[in-house]
Length: 413
Image (cartoon, rainbow, N blue to C red; front, side):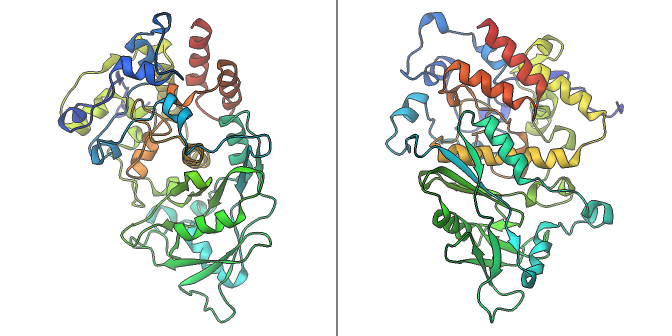
């Protein structure tokens, strides 16, 4: 390992010192325990200590400019309130399938859309970099089958396609069409990319969500559309990676800004330190203290934490830093985390304020990468046997060390 590499000597288990300077108040341990039960109450026999739970599920970091810093009053959602929500769409035998719409094909007359998938930054302009393979739809489907086990996950029967909006459209018209199967073509607004990271411009996210609503199959519980192009939502946005209309059961996610070629080179990722820029390395206490400018509490020695799920994950990432980075794997992992998050909204899961969790809100790509890929105890409304099967299925995709230790802890509980 390079002598300049951080050794992550202490792990941050609680919120950062910065969180104490803003109105954010993480619910205390007893309320977190109660919030994770269907009844809203916890039997005395099931009271794990705060540190025992944090060994697997640390608190949200809440760093400067994070979502909980910008909106510290985001209301918590307990498991009981999720169960009782009248906005939650019921899963039924006739409507339980998650569909994944593949990346749309591109009409030959719209070849400029290919430019919206290739960054124009300095590190992304060499021939070798242009050959970096983006995430594949079939891999996303396999991941979701594990993450949302036992729900069925299938590709949408028809592949979407970008078409000219009308025959008289110029190659770079302000509108293009998105066709899905035999449905009518939906008009998609386009605009130049404000930060010029993608030369071909951007597509409007809301318009694509409208197309997804039109294409939602009758037996679908939810539909997520994958897009390779850069997206925007509002005119004030620089870009947007994804969004869900949760109650309408549709989501759209773009992989464009998650391309590792953008790391440290614009594109919305501004990392204080690239080696701390993703989970679990972001839980290094030295990194948290440096960002906050103030040493705080909530740390534990890494040697002490080796047998814990979070400690095993940090140990694994230290070893990973010594090896050549799998850039295609990193790209896929980033996309998969956001797809599982947006589909969580289709399942009526709100943003989480209790733990570092895949359902945390994020204020940008950098915060996205610091969020863990797992659901915290409040997202585990299923029977323990289902959770175990889910973890076993996920081990082929990510963080074998965290999952292995988590399964060991479950065996002891």
